[in-house]
Length: 342
Image 1 (cartoon, rainbow, N blue to C red):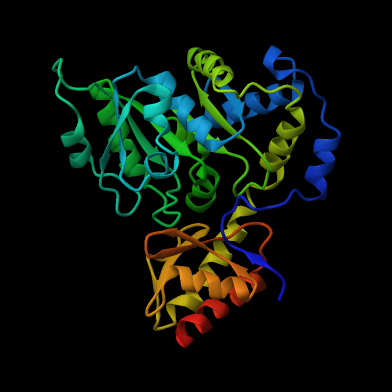
Image 2 (cartoon, helix red, strand yellow; image 1 turned 30 degrees about the vertical axis):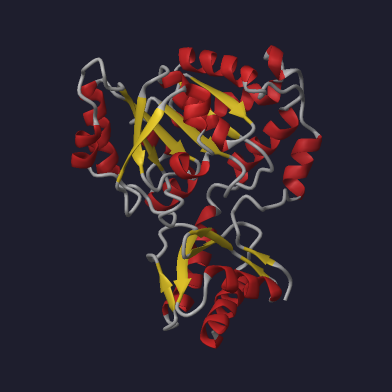
């Protein structure tokens, strides 16, 4: 079989339509605010999320960190899930870039419970950090692409507003959540002060994320984007890919969810494979009895299947536009055979 790459939905390649859009992009110098394609992308995302302004940046980490930067002051604290991307996979950036600390609470299914958040909020005394932000993740990567229920988001948002605490959404895969739930990105985003969304995951663009918020927040974020080395010039070539992705690759995410479902169905029938949970979107997390994650991923690679030993004792498979349904079935059969032979 040919190589099947399920390590992430970031491994996709631009298709012919996207390449044509990039090649024909109208460009200018974005540091001067003169790239018309970047401007169109930022206006489009701001409108889709119901925010005043948006800012195109190279990566999801930069987007999340800019959001935290504009919502906090040095010494503040952010409440977020213990398995969140910001806490686990952004290399300690909040402390380094913004001088803030993170206070984690349980989120075993991707959602956080309001009593846990309430107990994490600091008292208003001078010798404690100020709780400035509550950050959620949609969909939740480490918990297997789970969708945080809108009821939980509403409760947390109301609590934050009541206590004067800002809300941030790491919406890297908000598009998957929207397609699966039927709730629009704007509806999700309305509960938050800032939102970060990714174009280079399920949507298939080669580079880029976008943060959205108020005009004042975006003005401040643009300043820090420059400080952090994120000012770019003729970025319209990349923005054109993002616009193409928004036009063409959102609804097709449902196909990725079906591939994950089929993949999971085959694994669930195997006695030596254990799923963390049945997939809701495009991510499946599992483990195998009697074989280490390292040994399983190495054996899979020898058979032309790339998967990620992303978490301690668990393996992640992520489905995307460059994977067919047949690929998903072959991948599952490969894993089952390796597990059975262990």
